[in-house]
Length: 257
Image 1 (cartoon, helix red, strand yellow):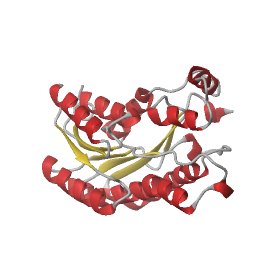
Image 2 (cartoon, rainbow, N blue to C red):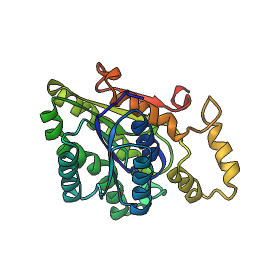
Image 3 (cartoon, one colour):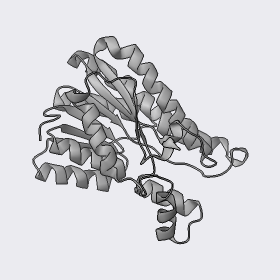
């Protein structure tokens, strides 16, 4: 119950899926939480739920693709909690699932704006607060498709590869400030984004599509948001104090083929 006690944690894309699970598990372990999202109803409801459980929590409407939105929210969160100890860069979108030669510039740019610039903006404006706090932990959600390729969603795969190397670069830059930076690479996790991806891919029978994707993983199932959330708790905690610049792959064996 105290693995991240009193650590002030920002979670982006906190309202649903992996972000929601991260917020719940961090709260259980004693974190104080700044929840960032554009889904205001779901985000506010999660904040209210966590507050009823005794957590110190507040929700901010944040579009991670807009630097001013990120900067203002991080400054307010730092004032509210007195410090920032952990940043979980979870917000992301899948984007258009078409071959590269059919994707428009606007479709490409939108995915990079959220998935890449969003990580950049959040790190940029969190670092000064972590330096003042004497250190911190940055946890970037990449993907198995930041490690291996597949014949779909090119903008998404490009963005997650970028996040992987941004993580390593920042790990090197900020190590002497006591700031650790690691990436998590989930396999297919059953979330609203993955469900929508399967629908966009033409799945007519969602149960069959889910079973087919499950078979891609040697463990024989799709992941759950909590499979990722507990890894986030570990990387946020002092238990992982000697880990930086690392890739934590949580994929049921998908990339072990």
